[in-house]
Image (cartoon, rainbow, N blue to C red):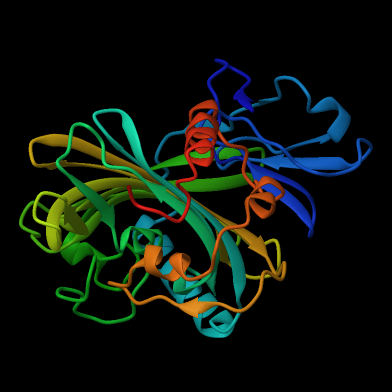
Length: 367
């Protein structure tokens, strides 16, 4: 999947065949989907004109045309009114559909000096309305090795919680409640705002940029929200986290003990939303972060994709500081299951990492 204008890949574009067959593109704009060759695929990406093609025509490069970017239209649409209305609609969607559940496919990779030292895949369940909440582990697999560049093995006990990015909050005073979301009745207390208009004929999306005020020291998002003027639904949220901390659990081999380390990190994210099932819900979340640990550059990438109500089994609730690895460890490892449940096409690097970990029988182990 590429931008038809410049040929650049479009990561995390939606490819929809039916309720049981859908996926998103990977970081390289590639995808795989199991469906009949005559099936019509609906392909969409926020800011681009949607396209329908037969599955048989999706073998090669598929291009999407970008929507037109317009100037600010202050006299036509007061942006403060739009933000207030979008906030109310997002909170209304949350209240009305907060009990809705979905299953999610989750993939996480961690690197130290470009060497992949951890790979995690799992299926989670949770409440997706408005933003992702209350994640539970259904099943998963992981592998981890001690990289030559580190004297200890490090993994992230709560990195999966980074996918739970709140967009709206009802409370009047947001400080001290976690990362401050952009949509609230008091957004102007924490954010400066700018915006652009994106057009496709009569349809208009507003790309609203929320820029944290310099004096704000709380955890906060610097983000752009794409809001549909007609429905007031958020279609996409992307940006970076500011003043955020990451919890590590490190095994120090020389001392044979674990230590817990809280490290400041700034991470980038992309949250795609959908109303395919009749309500606003999270469709996919991509998170990328960088930090320094013992003078080594470490980075982590995660991708979470909503697979709807496909039954995957009973979940086990995860706490915010819970350890995803420990939950996976008690389940055992079935290689055939994971070969049949790729869900989102793996990149060539991810494929090579999996082959290496499987050949060395590392899944379920830290070495």
